[in-house]
Length: 192
Image (cartoon, rainbow, N blue to C red; front, side, top):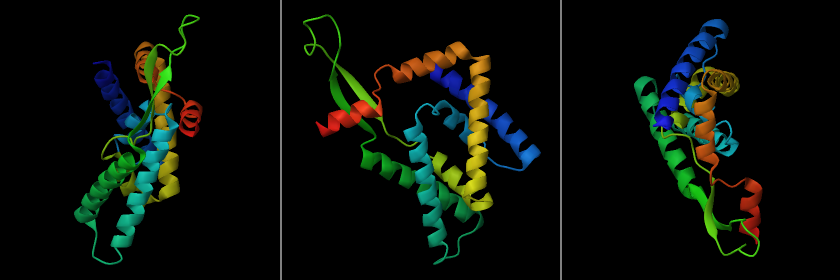
């Protein structure tokens, strides 16, 4: 329930920030709902990076496809969303969605190693259509301008969330980080 309310508020604030950014600076943030989603995942930079990579792969794929066939208007939008969905899904499948491993729980002396809990490191793309929406704006206004608009708007949305809903945001982040491992721990477990 907290996630739904926080997501709804984050998307609403993202809409407002995106509209202001477009009116003041003429920069779109990769779609109206994208800054709200990205703002909630800013503390998971690998997910943001994978989403941007999926968006760029989508942009390149549709741009390459448009050199072989006529792609414009609604067809281009539909292809961007479809290829965004496919590239995000394939990246999730390639990375396993989530790298999971059991990790010993540190507890009372003498019990180390006997109790196990489940830690995970999430490597996933944000949403299903977010890469496609970002790719659409890569096409419309360019990669750099879209990235600048997305970064600025996502950080502003996150800042506003911290100011107006600190307890809910902290609870959300605590739930997200409860069993999540950091990348150093994951790499140590993988290479041992």
